[in-house]
Length: 214
Ligand code: AMP
Image (cartoon, rainbow, N blue to C red; front, side, top):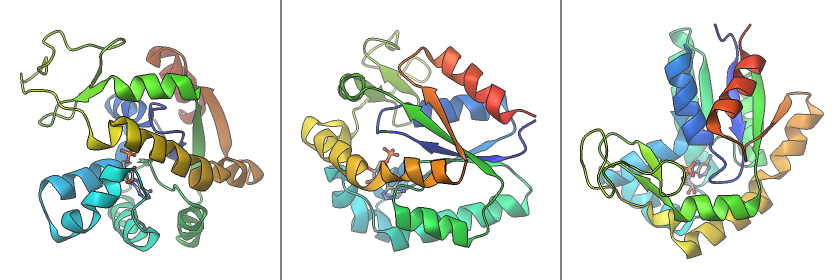
């Protein structure tokens, strides 16, 4: 039984999404992925989706005021239902982390998925996903048995616009400047656990379960 919320920190491609989806299946915890929320808005061409499409596809961050408001509403809704959740991709700036503190968000641990930059660049360039069921594949480590189609529903797999080389470079720069400082922010609060994310997913999940299960 998981009794605390989790914040995932890590470079783009460090495995936050895959690990979160895996934990969601194995435990009572619910994933909140800001990246998924934004991609859904873009796909549905909502007012917000149209406003943020260029920002997301170029690899920059959506403005804090927009992101904070969306996450706040999700958190309040899940807390009302007494659910524990994973923040996958939030906070990503010091301002977002301070906003979270301001919501009296205390019962949490931060899992930092540490990974080498060259592994990330390779992983992102080989990443494909199914636009229908959202399953993520990787050409070398988790290739669809029906590539270029999804194993589950046979939908044609696609690559994310922001996994193209120019956008990846931008995302790594933005991570370095805006998100990396959060490692020290949470270290200073004694909330940070570091996990070696260069390894096989089963080992990563095992280490995280040891931290979060009471
Ligand atoms: P992800 O799927 O987590 O890699 O997120 C994809 C993109 O969504 C990011 O590159 C940003 O453009 C946007 N995004 C996701 N989370 C945030 C956040 N916390 N703050 C600002 N932008 C975000």
